[in-house]
Length: 253
Image 1 (tube, one colour):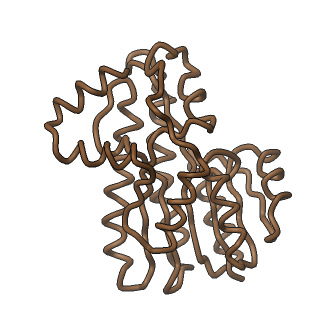
Image 2: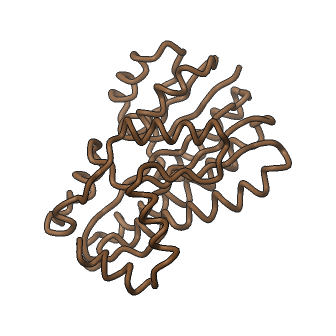
């Protein structure tokens, strides 16, 4: 049985990924997220058979449960997309410790656990994709834990690619800019941080972002930086001193 596994499949880019995976001629798509009702809605719109798995990937028990499901099924995993994630905007002192640690768990620790579970069942030609962010390219005040976690994910992905290359497994890190038509920003501000980043400068659209991302996934690129906004930030972060980039971040915060 050849399958794809998509985390964060109930919304945002994860949900967009399900439509592309649906065209790949797979036997089954495993949809992971916290909200079962949302996942069932996504599954109903697919032509490929879908398996709904409601798990909270900020919890170690969920990583173990997924690992057990994979071991029991012993599938041929053709594609894994780790799109689950969230951010919290605001001063570090105002954010809960629990919320900040949860960002680290879902972006960093869950990525490690997921990789450990899926790689033994991936064959030559398989794809492993991590949704990182342009935040990985620079430190962002009032969004610091999220940016640091995404920087980890980018570095981890690029190093893992070199390890898995001899086995013919591609690893792609995706680094999009703000995507304006998802729930991400409103959720990030839910702890009363509406005065930070009050205006999103030229946000991108999820459909356009996903179209470019999927081309990069199919081309087995190491890095996908969709949209001119993301490309500009990546270029600037490599050319300008960090203190200048921090000044720009504070200007828009």
